[in-house]
Amino acid sequence: MRRAAAIAMLVCLPMTAAVADVYRSVDAQGKVVYSDTPTQGSELVHVQNLHPQTNPTASPSSNRTAAAGTTAAAASAAGAGSAPKSTDPVHDQLAQQAAQQAVDRDLATTRAEQCTKATADYNSSVEARRIYRNGPDGEREYLTDSEADEQRLNLRLAMESACNTTPQ
Image (spheres, rainbow, N blue to C red):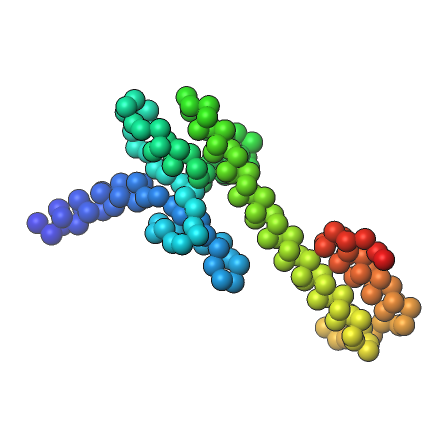
């Protein structure tokens, strides 16, 4: 009897996970968090609809709620170059716009992190008395003054490129 109950639970387990909504939010440290529980400031990014287009009397507001977020499948498929097609072009357009907004936010976060790292690298090279690189045997090889100046210049250019600034 226990064995049959365990098998029934294992068979039903994937079905319960398939109907979960997924919410996307950003925590205090700036990391993207995905959860099945809505929190303040989170957005709906995945709605599992087991019976698409079977209820023609569904209210338009419920369709707008579902279209307000993107599906994880649509986001990954858009990256692969093929988006899933549905019979509702408005839903498709809203899903595509939401996916583009999510990509734009993620790119902005990544660019900000790259700018912060490039700025820190440049500032540490300017503050350092001597600059070194690790040799093939793991020992420090100190750069000459001209090599150090060239390294600082390269780090400055990398910082300006990452932060989209122009030299002054």
